[in-house]
Amino acid sequence: MKKTLWKVAIIGCGSFTGGQYLPDIGKVCNAQLVATCDILPERAREYAQRAGIDQWYSSIDDLLEKCDFDILMNATSIPAHHEINMKALRAGKHVFTQKPAAATVEEVTQQMELAQQMGLKINAAPVHAMRHSNRKARQMIRDNVIGKVTTIRCQVAHGGPEYFQYRDVNPIWFYEPGSGALYDMGVHGLHYVTDILGPARAVGCMAACSLPQRMIRTGKFDGEIIRTDCMPDNYIITLDFGDGAIGEVYTGFCQRATRMPTMEVYGEMGTIAFVRDPQEARPHLEVYYDHPEAGITGWMRPLDRQERETFYCDTFCLQDLIDAIEQDKNPVLSMARHRHIVEIMNTIPRCIETGCIQPLSTTFSEEDTDRG
Image (cartoon, rainbow, N blue to C red; front, side):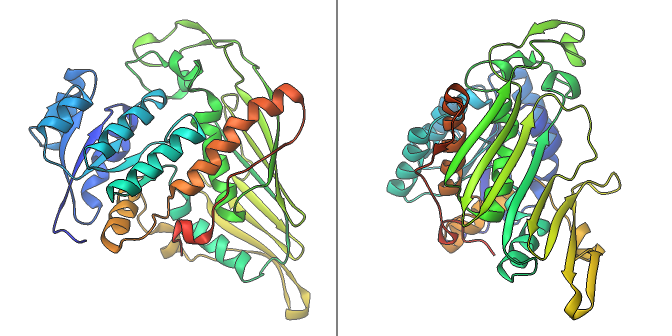
């Protein structure tokens, strides 16, 4: 099904929407923002004015009842995602949701089943699978460039939401049940590694609450001390991908800065590295080839500068959803993979409690993601 223009509404007018979605939504083919929505009416109005539109709402119910639109972008806080996604799907709207789509495997499954029943599409952040570097890395692994993969290591962390983001809402909610470092940041690392190697068979984890008290460093609550001892803020996650391949994801709210690669994939004949570069917005791809018989040994960049600098933004999640709707296919940012990631996160507390590796039951396939 194709349309000349897909009408989009955004719910959740926080810093991410203002910094990422609002400026770039016009760069998505066939998409037009028609409304904003937030529980703070003044913020919904402000973002609508910034976007040059005249429709803004303060509740999901009003938005669904009064506004004519096709796609909902859900950028609300983590605990609100499931209820809003379900309401939008029941109202006949396609949905892109920020991560995670829901707190449990059962809730993600409910969203998947409802979307299928209603003939709708739903996809979920993070967006890393759509990047040129991820696509190139997957292709090199398929082409056996680094031989059999043995290990994948990834780290996605920062110093805590109180440290680096400019907010007019107290960031303490990031440290409360239903949110936390695992669901806010760990989901990125798990998305990275499962995008490259596919579903995991089992998971283990070591975790700690390393900083039980923090000071808000920016915004309206600058200088306020908050207790953050409700759950761990520091995780080392281990994964078994089968066939001799294992993985490690470091994540949390305890990393002020790093020079380590975002991700490295080790194979019997080389290494693929996602290298951080202060001169580039995203990690760039470097590959170590160990092919002496072909006269090739050493580090190289498999993507040329034009490919590395091709415009990329977080609103490509919306392009992925529109492509899936128009071509009647599964999104690259599929809910099948997202459900698997949510299962991993749901299983981690049991790993911590027992000190044991736990098996996983969900999976996904290439067909579930329609990825290139």
